[in-house]
Length: 339
Picture 1 (tube, rainbow, N blue to C red):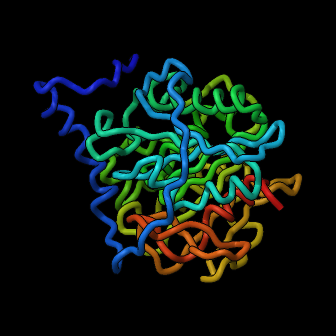
Picture 2: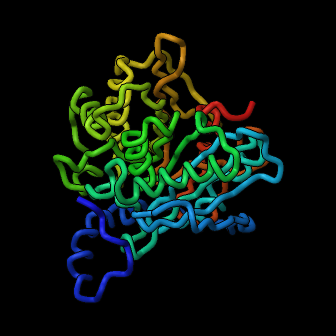
Picture 3: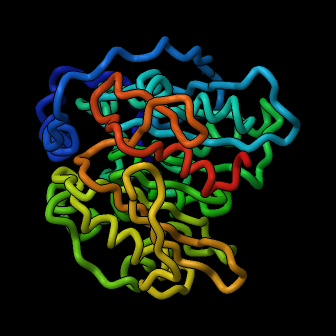
C-alpha cells in the first residue's frame, strides 16, 4: 500500500498515531546510562540536502564531506537512534573524523517527530520497510544522490545505524542488496521481525526463529534478486535490556543463512581495549561475510572510545554513546575503508 505524505497529522488523528507508535518507546525508555555525560565536542558542520529525490518517507538528508575527497570515494550512510538527530549522531559517533581520515562521504539520514513521536525510524511499519516505498526509498535516494552529486563509488556504498536506526539498517540491506555492499547493525533487530510478532516482543525477549525462516524474510523483500548478499556486521552490548542480545543471535542466523554459512564462527578473537568478543563467519573465498561483536559491560547504545589513538573515536557527550570501544572504527574497517 502506498505511504501517504508524511506531513504533521491533523489533531483528529493524533490518538490513532500515538497508539501505533507506543511500542517503539521501549527503544528509548529501557536503557539507563550511568553517570553524567561529559560535555560534547564542538558541533560537526553538516550540509542539509533538500532535493535528493521524491522522498516518500519525509526524511531529512545531511552530508559531511571531507575537505579533500578523491574521485570515486566510498559513501557511508548513518542512521541515528530514537530521540536523536543527525547532528547528535555526527557529533558523538566518531564517523566524521573517520570520514576525514579514510576519505569517504558521510550521509546522515534523519527522521522527525512528525514521522514518529519519539523520532525513531519506522522499522516496524510495513509501508516503510518495503522496496521502493516510504522511509526505505527515501534512504535509498539519499545514497543514490551522494553517488551522483559527490562522485561517489556506487560499488562502495555502506550503511550503519543504532537501535531503531540499526533495525532500519537491516531493512536497507534486505530491500536494497543491489545498492549496499555491507552494513553494520548496532543494537538493532533482524529484518521483518514484526511479520509475526509485536515490536515490544521483538525487542524483548526477542523472536526465536530458525536461520532458514529468517533468511526467507529477507528474500521476500526483493524476490527477483539473484546477486550477492551484502556483508553484515552486528554489534551489541551484553547487558542490553532494551534490544536484548537474542536479537544479535537472530541477526547472525539471518545473515549467515543468506550467505550459506554455518552459525558456528570460523574464528573468534578479542578486539579493542575492553576485549570485545569478535566472531567471524568466513565465506569460501576468504571474505568475512558476517561478523558479530559482543561488547562487555554495556547496555543500549553506540560503543565509543574518546581519545586520539588510532583505534579511538567518538564522544560520550549525549545519551546512548557508551565509553567502551570505538565501534565506528571497527565498522569502517569491516567495510574495507582506511588502512
